Structures are given as structure tokens and as C-alpha cells.
Length: 300
Image (cartoon, rainbow, N blue to C red; front, side, top):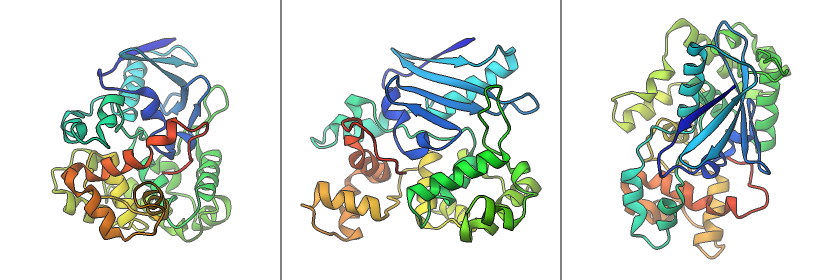
């Protein structure tokens, strides 16, 4: 079974699929030879389903591992649109960069859409697992979590566990099985708070709070500091924050400062001309060469 989903004229499937490291974390898989993005979609009471997404001219084709009914097809279509940011209006961002010689490539190549999970909860769990560690450790934690708690699709691949699956697990499970270290109580508490209704992380997508207030709300989740919150803001469509870390600082030094170490203030000044879009301009700038490399870096 195959679904066809129309895409905006500015959409670039490759740039979106490889926009940051989520493509390398299950339930995502990216084949860079065929440029096919595989994902296991949770269908609620029904068994999860593995889908393969490929880019076309003004559309994406979604191949399903089995036939599904209309409600499931609508759910899959909705999730694909959400993951690929097909409903994001990039006009103002592209206008902001169009007349800058170093950044006009963003608009002409259709960059700027950042791949995300079907749920904010999944994005948040993954983001917590990127903090204060190597990408290899992040990869190990997420693979262990999915292997242990994900539901099987018909091909044996697993979905990402929801909060209901994660909440009953002990801190020892997260520490010993997932190897999440100090994050163990944070992951358990997050899942429990979501299940109890104490927090509604999905509402961040449509929150009317000013960005600074939404950032403060995100930081009330244990394990979420400035870096994680500013990256989460990007995934809900807020691009004010730069989310600076050692990788970004090093890449900026090499590409924009003659390989000399620089201050965060200088980086902030460099992108300040893009106003509310400065965080997205920075990320596009730092990852411009990813499609020019044989293998893209596996990094948020």
C-alpha cells in the first residue's frame, strides 16, 4: 500500500531528512544510497507499522508494510506531515536570508525544515539523552530504550515507547538497561508526569506563551537546561535560541573564525541580524556541508 502526500514547492526531502541526528535514532533509519527514510509508526491499539518515505517532485511517497484502513492512513499521513514539517510556512525565514550572500543558498535549496518525531514526548526524551554525552552514548541509550519497551511491527522493528510504557519502569531499569546514568530518574519522572496529566508537553506545539516563558516551562522538566530547551523550541517552531554546544562552537570557529576559538557573544552577534530566525540560520550554516560529505555527521 502506498500513500502520496503533496509537498510545498520549497520542500527539500534530502535536506529535511538529514537536517539533524534524529534520522540516525530509532525508530528512524535513513538509507543515504536510496534516500529512503524508514520509520515505525505507533497506531495505538493496532500493531505498529513500518513505513518508508521517499521524496519526489512536489510530493513524498509513503510505502506501508501492510494495508491499513482509512483511519490508520489518516494517522500515518498526519504523522508524516508533522515529522517532515510540511505545514511549516518558511516564507518569512527565506525572506530573511534571501538577500544575504552567505545565506541565500538556504532559500534556494529548500533547507530549514528540521526533522522531528511524531510526538513532542519522543523529541523530549531523545533531547534529554543528548545532553552532556557523546553521540555514540545517545545512540546507545535510545536503541536500548526502543529495544526494551517499543512495540513490534510486523517486520520486527519497534516503535518508540510512549509515556504509559515508560512510567512504570524503575530507575534501576533506566540506569542499568538503558544506561542513561544520571538521567534515569529524569526519564521516569517525565513519563509519570505526562501520564498523570501534570504536564502536557504536546501543548508546546500550539502554546501562545512568549518564547522566553515557554522556554522556562520546558526547563521545569528535570534534565532540560538551556541547550535542550532551545533545541526543543526549534522542534515546535521557535527559532530564537542558538543552543550552543561544543560541536557548534567548534564548527563556527572552523567555518567563520579562521579556526580560532571564539566567544559565545561573538557567535550571538554574528547571527543577530536574523532576529527571531537566528537559531535556524545558525543551524543551516553549520550543517550546509552535510549533503556535500559522503557521510553526514551523526549529531544533533
